[in-house]
Figure 1 (cartoon, helix red, strand yellow):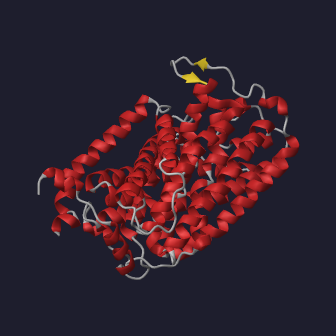
Figure 2 (figure 1 turned 60 degrees about the vertical axis):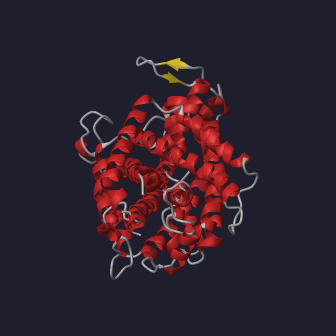
Figure 3 (figure 1 turned 45 degrees about the horizontal axis):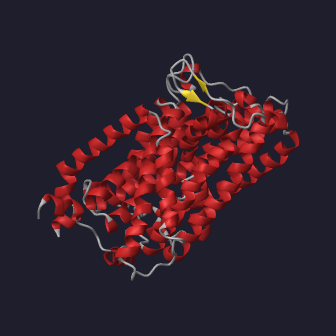
Length: 477
């Protein structure tokens, strides 16, 4: 078998479907509402409580709501494509597994390697955002951490390491190691609290909106001392490139396909339901926060809480911080679960050492990659600022979206006979919209993000050609 044949070998859809039915490593314990809660848990979090305010202050002004719409169009198109794949190939691995079926092993490896980094960095970024709100809540009762432990270097004078962010990442890893359903039930409760809390913030904030804060809706473009452009329509696109980080978490639930009781029915429904609810909340909160406070005051660690505190509503500020502390943890849960399942899938297919594909003999969880992710994401959350993490996350996920949307078009022409539990409407129009908007958002990311992403993908190629191509399960067959 020559090199081209090796990197293009793939698993057939029928093979993946039969494997999903025959395997029993992971326990099928998740229903529709638990899957939807994982999706909501992955989407609603730092986007509402941190990034909406920060990007309004730095790039978009009140037009941050428009940035969410742009990001949401790309995400919605990709969600419809994910829903078709999830109903057709209900196997752990998400975009990695779908790529394996359509585009071959080489591309699938790059997608899996890409998502492994992105999901892990999301855990780190969200843990960092969560720590900011917990510190805000602690400040209300007079508790202050030492300055060195309050955040990563570069986020403030005297700061060295974000201790709280590191501890929460490691704690969630331990929870996911014990029992998936225990974590999922706790996550469902937390997500319910989060949705109710966000709705209350919107309801109360509506009475304090000052429409003068929305003028101008798109502030005029400015260039800073480093030559970077902010505001104007360019700033809106730049903000969309960052807040996109907050509107794609539904794909985390597809990584739990083999832990779903009825994946072909429940996965497509959970994807669309979680995205629809989340986008409604994102758009509403964007208008509320920029109406309650002037956008120039929102560039801080807890913008929503601080916006209400500036109005003298300290009790609301404390309540928002409490809701954020309880709710952002569910995002850490969703993406930690997803990252561990991607790592598990890569190892099970032989592209990474099989040692990582062993499930816990008592709990039936992929505990080895989960615990390692807890340590690695904890270190990243403690050492890196949230803004740098969010940008690096988005470039990888947008690339994965391009692959998923393109693959739907390919499959419609090459395998029209395959049974689909859900069909993406208006093919090829919807996938093309997903591809075009994803490419557009990629253009809003800075050069340094592309450089870091390129280095990670280069490392992935080295790992694949040094190990994966020879140890792949398909190579052994």
